[in-house]
Each structure stands twice: as structure tokens, then as C-alpha cells.
Length: 168
Length: 198
Image (cartoon, rainbow over all chains, first blue to last red; front, side, top):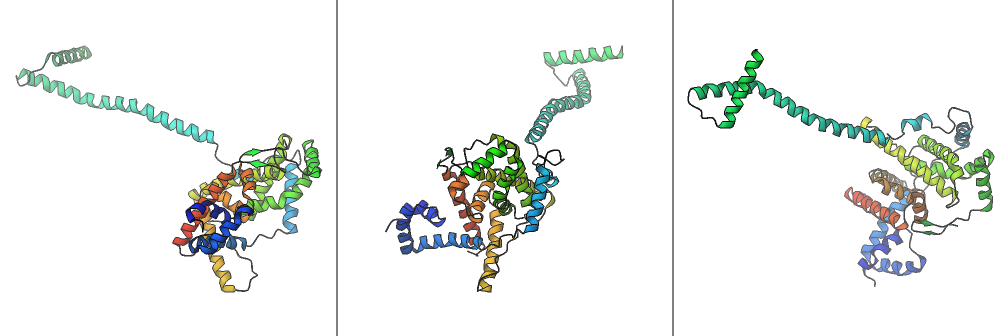
């Protein structure tokens, strides 16, 4: 008897009825002898049989008359619907991919632009506190409690100069 | 007839009468196109119905497919059967429709429209009832499959198409269709076994 693993693909093709007639005999023989493969094939065939029993819609003359009339209307030149789409189809027309891509790009750009703006905003907010900090630093330095290095001193000088200029 | 090897399709020899009708339709002969519509409208509606589960939607989809085919018939180069081309358009229109229905279902939470019913004939009412229940579960499980698997499965089992024909309609290789079917059936079996109905 052939091994199950060796037949796996062929077994599936056999179960869906797509195996060449020349190969069917070997598989049939294996399925007869192997309970596991027999069960596998039976399950697939069960699905197929249940679907085959499904009731097909009955398309009567009235249906086809309406169908023909509507189609003739759509195909005839000069009518508003000719070559176009019915309202139902327009309702279900897919969203244009271009519009979707544009929306995504706009979102990305908005995020990119908002980052520097946000940092600017954040920079402005502590500016008020900065004044307090500098004033406190000056007081501390005058009291001898704070030893500022050269850069810090230069920064404070510049700050004081700016304040004086603003007052003028 | 067409010789298919994977995606390769050789020039198709259509029946002479059909070829003549197509050529006449390409020249703008509406009667010839109507004859083509008459020949294929039933199968087209049935394909759309099996994909959407709703006859009104199927009618709209079939009409849309015929309108699109009519608009592009001048570009038809006889590389495939006319029916294959028409069914491909039908499947594509149905797919667009299903995607939109899925989207609207997500937004509005609308109900499934697949209405399963088993043929009334048959000797055993209890078995019919069980099959009906199983049919409902299969339909729901099919709806949950990825789109490509769903379409391949429906064309194979509800339209009884050969894998080669499905491959031509979906414009993929035969092996790809088999993979879709294998995955679809595997997922269905798993789901139905979990629900202890298979």
C-alpha cells in the first residue's frame, strides 16, 4: 500500500474530482484500505454533497423580461443609463484608492509639520519660567550661593542687556 | 478550444457562429450582442448569485458585467473564450460589490444575505434538516474565508467549474487555484469540526 504522506496532494485532488483518470486507480485502492484517508475524502465529499443539494434560484420569465428590458435601456445610446451604472452599483462603487492614498499622505504631512510646531510651542512656554530662573540665578550669585561658569555668566549678561533694551 | 498551461493561454478556436456574432458586435451590431447576452445571461446571473447570495444584487452585477463587456468588446482579441472573459468581468464586479458590502457591514452592521435552502425533494426529512443546518454553517464559514479562497471555492462547488476554467477566470495558474481550494477546504473542515457538525 502507498504511504499516506506520499499521496497527500493527490488525495486532495482525488477528493475534489481533479485527478487524472490514470492516477485515480491507485488512490482509490489506497482510500479503500486506509481508514484515515477514507475519512478525509468522505469529509470533503460531504461538503460537496451538501452544497450540491442547495436550492438554485428559480429564474422565471418575468425575471428575464425585466432583465432584458433594463439591459436594453442601459445599452441603448442616448439614454442616461447607457454605458453607465445603476444607482445600486454606484452605491457600492469602491472608494477610489487615489483618495485614500491622498488622505494618508495628508495625515503623515500633518504629523511631520506638527512636530516642529509643537517643539516651538514647548519652547515658548518655559520662556516665562526662564526669566524667573535667570532672576533667581542672579540673586543667588549676588548672595554668593551660586558659582556660575563663563558661559552662564555670558548668558545672564545677554539676558539683562535684552531686558534693558526692552525697557528703553 | 483553449490550451492552458499555467497562465499561458493560446489562441482559442471559438465556434464559428459565436466568432461571427462577436465580430458583428464589435462592428456595433446590437442584435449580435443581444444574441451573446441570451446565450450567457443565465450562467452570468447564477455566478453572481452564488457569490453574493442575493438575486437582486446578482441581477445588477450581471447587467453591469454585460455593459462593461459591451463597452470593451472592440478590444476582445479572441485570446480566450468569450464566456471566460465575461465570467471574469462578472467575478470582478462581484468582488467589488462584496468588498463594499463588507465595508458597509462593518459600518452599519447589516445582516448576511446568504440564504441557504435545501431542495425539497428527498425521502428523509430529518436528514434534510441536518443538511440544511450544515449548509447554513458551510455558507457562514465560506463567508469568513479570505476573498480569493472564497471565490475559488464558490466557483468550484457552487458553479461546478473545473479548476482550469477557474484559473482562466481568475487569471492565475491552475496550481494557485488548487492552493486556494486546499486552504479553503482545510479552513472549512477545521471550523466545522470545531462546531462538531462534520
